[in-house]
Image (cartoon, rainbow, N blue to C red; front, side, top):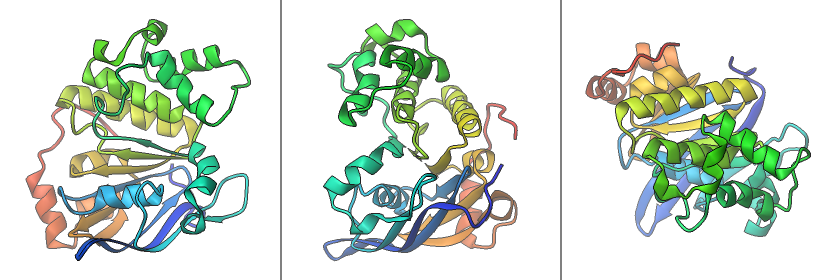
Length: 266
């Protein structure tokens, strides 16, 4: 269920990112409502992943404003914070990257990978670390025996489930999903998408879903924004953008992307 329109958790206004003389993102504004999945869609090079990383301050914006409104505190201007001051907030703002292989340290066991966020933030789960790690694996559909294994022992889809478990470790409010299934084959990707949808609904997560696939954002997202050459050219509910697009570019994206070949129903 989509949150009330006034309940904005993370909001960016007029984000700009320049690299030298090149403008990668030009005046992008997005607002994520509590408990919704917001889709940012566009072809490669449109600037959507750059926007996602700026929202989390993984990339510094050239200009613009980012405000985070936690459920248990006052609004925070993220663009005014140093990286040191950002650190306590990172437990509430998590990301799952596109490449499930590069995102995991091959020298660490799954137990070490999932325990790392707790060590970084000096946090001890109330029910005990071992129990929490088992709980995380169960949530993403992996057996407890996975804890003693290493990334090379898993398939791409399983690795992405480990990445998702790690992102959920500290119970974030906002989860950024940066093309989380683009490196997976269609059937495995559909299983991961259904898992993400289930987790979002179960935990009331606020998600930003980055994709080049209109069928995926139609299935997963409550609202959608379309990016072209660093600008948001169209936005609205998934019905408005996917079923009744106004911009030629959006229509071209819809025409260029085949429907999902694995059944996933709203």
